[in-house]
Length: 583
Ligand SMILES: Nc1ncnc2c1ncn2[C@@H]1O[C@H](COP(=O)(O)OP(=O)(O)OP(=O)(O)O)[C@@H](O)[C@H]1O
Ligand SMILES: [Mg+2]
Image (cartoon, rainbow, N blue to C red; front, side, top):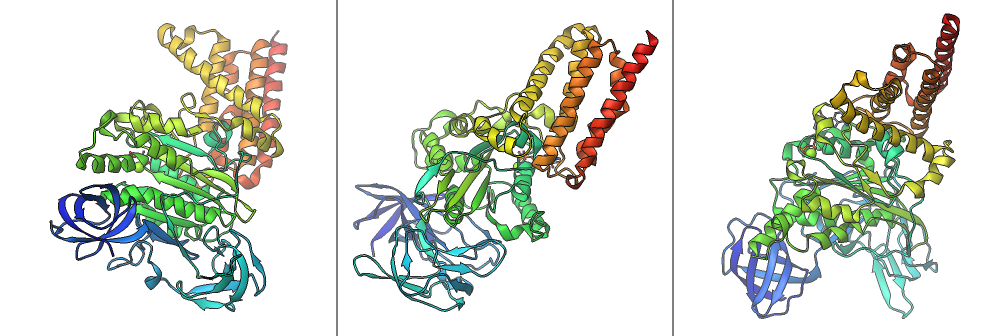
């Protein structure tokens, strides 16, 4: 075993003198307690490593030993429904957990295995050799990527330990390869796929402003930037709860411990609206709160994405939420600072941008090695200090994401949630997803979306004008625009995460609401042109009903939207008759 001796230590980083051969990114064990670490620099004098545990008590002269392997996590069925730290060590059965990176086997529970191949069958690359018999998500037993050959033997259905040989493969060279339930994978290396596929369908979030105005494709990447208290965590949690992914990987990265505790307490009590099962069954939580070691926070993002890719390789659609990428970047900054590296903008290291790129590039909609389809969608929260979007983590993230959901301080202060600003946010996936919306019963989605955005743009302009001349001085047509834009805001864009009816809005309900609103806009404009007074339009009872529609009409009562359209027609017709009569 290669060994080195510590000669300098500062927080989570240390230098050690070595005579042996270490390599970059190699996992190491440090000191008597064998703390896990990773080599981040090698030079003629020795190595520099970051350590994933509290380093109190370590001192010069302590020993560092190499493992010969890169920092890896052990992937296997049965990880769903659990809570781990940044190195995939169980937090469910802490404390006293002594599992080390890449060697979880000693602690793993018995796994229920159902063979899906027989002796003599061919195992193609990426193909599963068994099903995991538990839970409602179809987890599979996967060989390490790249392994293929003929099945020589395979165990019968039953319960096995993680490290037991379940299947023996003979490869093309006649070499026998034993396969067990899990395999180690280095977290910083993307798992291979057959090919990447273009975006084609959305990740339905159930949040109207996201799905209808700024949709995110499955396999896409989104940033959710927002200053203090603007609703990042609540939105990330809403997405984790209600978005239509098969599997959720939730990385709580450097956030306050009590916030994370809330998530941990709440999740097990929630029910998946589609399956009726506990939501935690389809979720893995990686928790690395602000009081946990900073280097493990740096690793947690990679652990999360590796786990997400592992589920993707089983033909599943995965959504990864990272809250927050800023805290992760701060971990990079702290480590870099301790090493005395030349700081860049705001003290972040120069490689911040390439690290963000590497992370977001692992999001993809793919054809798996086995020929199935799967995806990893990334949604990264960003917490810019003082809500300043010109700081490096926000601007660099913007370069790599396709969806930008900008949380607005003024909206949040006015308790308008979600506080996503419709004029500073964008989605580059709109064109790719129009077809999907059209196939979901809204052939006019593109034009409806455009009309809504135009109304909101006009509102911003008119409000500036109204501040100068006063709202009442605007011509009635412009006042109507303001009225309609308010309706859009209140009814379409406002959506409480705490409302039982409205915390999730199906695409069908989004379409019905959108239609009802635009019908009102259209008829109101016609009526105004026909001579009806703006005050009469503003006083229509149906307008009140429309404003409350998203809160009051649940997903299983969509026919009430049709009634709402009819009522609009009745009231507008009545106004027209009254007007004709008066003349
Ligand atoms: N979608 C929402 N629906 C209803 N209320 C919300 C919503 N989003 C945020 N809020 C309210 O705003 C508060 C702050 O939200 P949250 O904790 O998510 O902000 P944050 O951006 O994560 O803050 P921090 O910067 O501290 O991490 C919540 O406690 C809640 O009262
Ligand atoms: Mg938060």
